[in-house]
Length: 309
Image (spheres, rainbow, N blue to C red):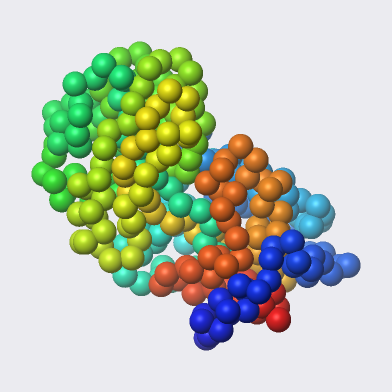
């Protein structure tokens, strides 16, 4: 087991820029195929995951790498378990739903935080989470992290909207067209679908501070009250909400040498694969080991140990 306090002390003295690349060595592993499970259209998971696969390709030249579109966290956990993919992005609350690590899975590291958005047109009568009762609301695609967290919020508040399962892109289009009243989405910031919606229509975000406090009190660990900054979306004011960390997961049976390459690429080539996503650019070696109940994969743990030396 890693001594996390000692590791953090060591990492504090090491900048990402001083990490020595080349852990993959001159001989890349022989792996025929590697699938990274991402998210739906219009989601940060989808864009960051695809960019990470592109960053990995030079380090795994004999491997066919694929960024697979999915419903998001819940879907990714299922697909990792059945072997459809070897790597996958997931929010910490969905991972910790049983207060223990999913069997057969471990972590490459903690990445960045997602923020819950409740998006409405600017002239909407919806002013609070409770106001979506009876309204037409997208709660994310089937198998998404949005759906998982939204279910918890709805159960805690007793609010009963007319829910629709939609991707971020489809939900944003439906808000613009007026065919739904609001969209809930748990995502990194800025998220492409909402950025595009804000260019087309005047929108605002609904204050979720009461729900953030309730989630943080009921589920110790994954939920933190936060604010979506005013600079995130053009013409949209800052808004209190709740944030959730995201992890990059891997199957336990993926080779240590491959996971080491994935870990090094993730934490030393951040600028290359998070361009246009300021929140994702917060990925760093100091917070990378804070993976909650999920243990680091031995390949990732070995890389972090070497970095602290």
